[in-house]
Length: 284
Image (cartoon, rainbow, N blue to C red):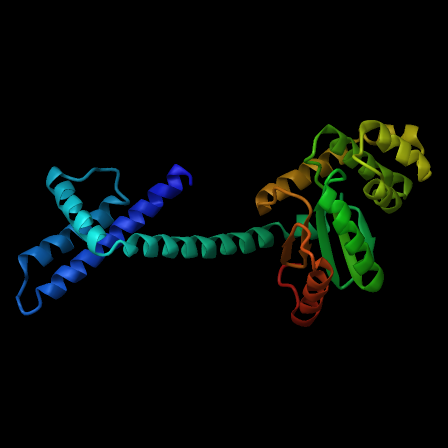
């Protein structure tokens, strides 16, 4: 657990302890007007809330009062810390989901309609599937079989490929070559051949496979140096960072995210496609 997150947990937990202690003390003092102990604890709790957002420290008197309250409450109700941590985790999860929705909305054009990205399936399809992948990712190879099957079964599916080379220099070479192959009109056949090749893709096998699928290798090498290829890879890398994607494969079916290759990828993908068709996609 990072120090920053731990500090937040401790701060939230401490506030919970103090407020709980105040409530308990005031309950014990029922029938007595303005109990000195209950009032003092309430003041300390409010001081903690103020200091959590203030750069100034507590006075020695406040620190002593806090220490006494924390010790007393921890002994009698140790579950308060766990409750506070669970509440914070739930809050952070909700905030993260909100952030993801916002990031998708802010980057929708780049995600679904970048001028650099190769497209397969039906270019005018009613549902778009976006894949971030690496040719040397074994799970991408496995996922490709499922994606191709779904694409063949659903003629209204539009598929966008995001070249996201994260497995080293050979992956980068393969991504650049694949993007360059667009100029010869052979992206998909080359993409498929790279993913279905035996073993890891290497700098040499990239061009061997290119030749096998009928690409002009000399032209391919020249086109790999084009600014568009570099811009495409840089754009995808930046987009992945904005969306919080660090691994491959990563799929978006409309605004629905699938990370990795679950055992039931076929069913999950089809279910998301059906849902998008029924309910629409707000950001697509």
